[in-house]
Length: 481
Ligand SMILES: [Zn+2]
Image 1 (cartoon, helix red, strand yellow):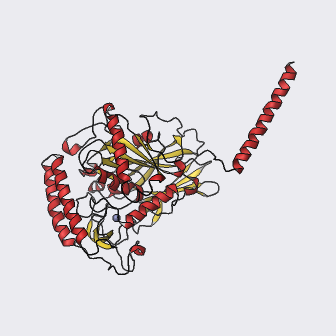
Image 2 (image 1 turned 30 degrees about the vertical axis):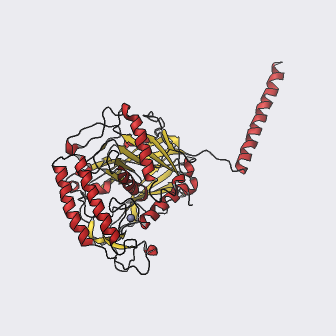
Image 3 (image 1 turned 90 degrees about the horizontal axis):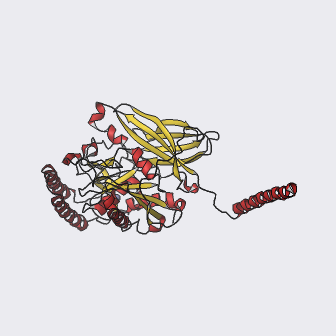
């Protein structure tokens, strides 16, 4: 009896295997999905001073969610970023994945303090987990803005020391908009920092408001269906994030704070591990942190993250402008605000898509968008702009130095923007693409593509060149339209 029962049982099992194998074959033939690879993260320390730059391995992490990218768009051909990394199969040399990116580190190198000491920044590279041993190669720009090798490390996904136990999720994942599988969409994660448990409804409303602000601006507006937007906020004990220059000290879960590199409006986190562990519980390719503060400020690093002060009257502008840095590597086109960086000599063409040094024999990289009748360089009311901007920046500094309420700053910004909008829209060439001198923090030697742009003033429209660069990044993640 036992034999009789056992035998058909084994046969049934074998039959089941056959059926499963046939089904799998049928799946392949009908193009059904193979499951996405795991998401692997290489954490490292980026250390140095004015003379020396060192990359040091920290750990390899397998994130809890599968890879959110599309296998057909693994290779980045946009050529942007201070750095570029490649994942290469160790055995065959095949290029498996690549992306350009930027880092806080090059900003540190420009600081006077980098002549006196070293500093360390924790950073991450994320990629689909390779099937076998692979090499990660990091390239960085040399003095001529060409990519040269900076670091190479062999990784083995089978290594027992790969961390596979994720830190627990710190907050529920909210869906702001879901338009398809992560692999087919740009996945934007909005994180909240400095929100108390009692402020979580506010966070969701803020995330929805900022998402709407992004999709109000072209070309995001026309490409909204190419995006999924997710949101998550780990709770803080107290409201707001730190702003040391006004004496506001806070512990917040993402470590975001004002006064990065002692620039009062520059908002960054230096706690990359906290950021990545928290974010790893969402499918994401881009991440923007909302700081639950009123004071004007933000920041954006290409391929890393962006930040924006969500209760600023200028939050819509801040969110989109900083996202422009993070998403499409757009340069700042402004040149009259004080910045912490050393002045640059315009003797090398910048790599960013929306600024040019107009070097001898080198037309602007956006020459195809310039009409034959537009002179290059392109005349614009620069002296009138600079006169006003000089006075406005002095008043801005006085408001900060005196610790005046944010409302006074908002009035000043509104006055200034009204003046700039009028001046720039009334001038000849106001709608032209050309090469307008004054960009990239410098009054001379660098040129921007249009009279006005969201990367130049608080004007709520991207110029055609910035718009095109944003479109190329959307294509890289969601496929061309
Ligand atoms: Zn622009």
